Amino acid sequence: MKQLPSEATTPPCTLASAVARLGFETIDSCELEKERRIRSLQKVLNQTPAHQKRYKRIARLMAQLAGCRKGERCGGSACPVCRRNDRKKCISSLVAEYDDPDAASRLSFVTLLRQEWEFPAGKLHLCKPRTITDRLRKQLQRMEFRRPIFGGVDLSFDPDRKVWMVHLHLVVDGLTKEVEGKLRQLYPASEHIRKPVVVKSVDYTYGAFSYAIKSFPNCRPSYTDKQGRANTPGKRRRVPEPHHTEFLLWVARFPIGDLKMVRGWKLVDGTISRRSLAEHDQP
Ligand SMILES: [Zn+2]
Image (cartoon, rainbow, N blue to C red; front, top):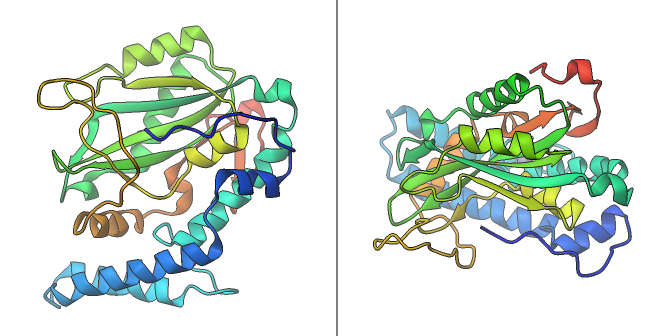
């Protein structure tokens, strides 16, 4: 897993410094990525019979991406420019909330994995992000844990086993040992998931929030090799085709909000603000 940016020096609390420090993707790099996505979709389209439903879906997504421009943004989940804009908006709202070091010290970065969240290549359409986040919401409700959480549904692709591994990255405000213990019971280890619950302290608040809702799937080999030894992830690699196209067609089906896990926050058009405790568990 990619390491979160570490806290080498205390950064000035401004959005601009946070964005610079995070190496946040630029609008230009996102435009280039958008063009790259359109080109790879075109290649897949050329090999797809026109009568197939998939043909229409690819053509629709290409048209949406091609039509996304300044002043007329598409707002789609498969669009790198719109995902960047949304992420930036979220971080800027959170900057104000966690400006205070005491508030920031309450945060933990939690990653959850589950065997049931693995989908073989070609079967990603069976994954419903809202089912995953609603389930966690109910689990937290049963634990009577009522603290703010902000996070997202993330994907990585294992090129050795050819499976998608869905996971949740969550920035949790006020995680207790008791709740961590209960999560460990609910998210057990399995053959390919050695560490289903990973809890880290948050050294750099904005980095944690930003990573929690990153929009690019990672390509990473199995968590264990054939001898059962732990595999350490290498440098981030792009998910190879045709799998990357499968990801794009999958993610395009959902509004960006469905890919987030938000509890104790109010999310309106990508801008977030505090919500009252009574409203916590409203979907
Ligand atoms: Zn767009």
